[in-house]
Amino acid sequence: MSFKTVERKPLSFAERTYVPQILGGLKTTFKKMVKPNETLEYPEARPTIPPGYRGVPTLVKDPNGREKCVSCQLCEFVCPPKAIRIKPGEIPADDPTAHVEKAPQEFDIDMLRCIYCGLCQEVCPEEAIWLQNVFSLSGYTREEMVNNKAKLYELGGTLPDDHYKWDKKKAAEEAGNGGH
Amino acid sequence: MATEFNVPDTAAKTAKAASQEFETEKMSLAMGPSHPSTHGVLRLQLELDGETVTHCDPVLGYLHRGDEKIAENMTYNQFVPYTDRLDYLAPLANNAAYAAAVEKLANLEVPARVQAIRVITSEMARVSSHLMGLGAYGIDVGAWSVFLYSFTEREKLYTLFEELTGARFTTSYSRIGGVARDVPEGWTDRVLAFCDQFPPILDEILKLLTRNKIFMDRTVDVGVITAKDAVAYGLSGPNLRGSGVKSDLRKDRPYWGYDQYEFEVPVGSKGDCYDRYLCRGEEMKQSIRIIRQAIAKFPAGDYYAKDAVRIFAPKKDKVLTSMEELINNFMIVTEGPQMPAGEVYFEAENPKGTLGFFIVSKGGGVPWRLKIRGPSFCNLSILPKVCQDELVSDVVSILGSLDFVMGECDR
Ligand code: SF4
Ligand code: SF4
Image (cartoon, rainbow over all chains, first blue to last red; front, side):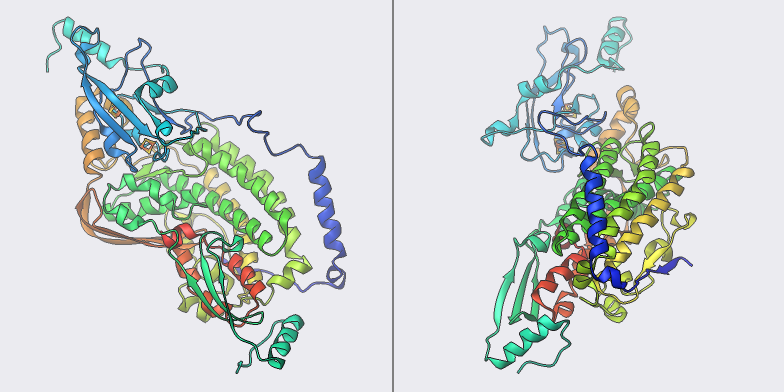
């Protein structure tokens, strides 16, 4: 049978006096008393954050210090609560990374809107936006809760890069077989 | 004049006798929307004759966010985070049910591994949701410590969720055609470790209530729902089965391969609060059984449907290295996973009951209409009927036994 009826037994006389329950309850209580604590004394003690945690979204640079975001605005598009605002900008021609052409001029994430869903990280074609392990943030005003570009890079820092696709592209172009 | 009704105990009898002796006026009492035992922003407009409820009117809508309308304005994948916020005590189960509904529309088979992941996560969500329901119910009827112990166990589950999805609470784990990321190394072993240590603790927790005279006085024969009423009012989940109706979608219309797992579905015999409580307790044990079986034959393979070119976004390293996949990524994100036109309804057995999604699609990446059947909403519809002629203090007990969550009730 895949269905079974749950058992209901009437209380015995002893159980009706409530004494066995009190004793049983006390037993549980004493057992728990001598056990180590389940709680953490936050903020002195911090929980361990597993890899892949979805904390505050940040912008990252590659190990050469290039800002990875190319302001394609895909994250701005996908963000369900519309927390991201990007103003695209050109990279000046004399910059060593000028061949990347674009970088954000302004990049704001409104942390009062962000729901930490991680979709921005998932869609970013440059692996430029990452939800890292910062999980607690606070502020006194609404303005304080909007992370601007400088703040985002400060939070994000540098992450390793597996592809260096722009460096490869530049090398290929210099070798004469770049092309579009 | 007051009509004759069955009064549950002597206290009520005295109260009733007193109210007949003196000419009394009916009193109206608003319970909620910020009453601790209404589990959220529910308001019960009660009409009382002394201690007895003569009329109960649930007032809903305080948590209305317009989720169904929001869904019409975004692509299918973008809506996944919003499903977290339906039954926010079991987000993983909602994510999976929603994704399965859209996959049904797309006529998309998901790999066995995805199905197994969905079964495991949904059952874990069931355990965590019932633990919460149990703890809160304990508080409602005056047993504080149950909450502390069940919450401790729930935290352990949340730590496992956190490792799997990256968030403890708002998991957003499903994607149309798969899941957001694969199961981390060694995660299934940690789930098994949880399954090993949990049942004795669950027994200990249940022991605090099941044979407890005070708890039984508050729940046995209180809020009786007959099987006929339960069906007529569209109840589902443990509330329906508590009344003895043998119905569980996992058995009746197995999805995600539930038919390969061996488990029993508990049903009640009387339909009172105590039966609903017993069913939840037993369901947790059965969920652990399912999780064990699912992990024992955890299939290898992909965590996303491979052939769904226009549905599932390409892998990250492909996006970074191939121009074609990059364009594909942009198309899927901006236009949404491409769905055929049509109408589908999919429902899944969630911890709180049957969560259904009805999708009307005119093709493309955005639903034309998405209707959500929240089990809590239907479960609450029976309140006026069960609360009739009960004592005010029993209303608290009945509410807790229905174990609803306003997030999916108001949507
Ligand atoms: S963070 Fe990524 S997705 Fe967002 S604009 Fe920059 S490159 Fe595009
Ligand atoms: S995590 Fe989600 S809500 Fe937050 S910025 Fe990214 S896409 Fe937007």
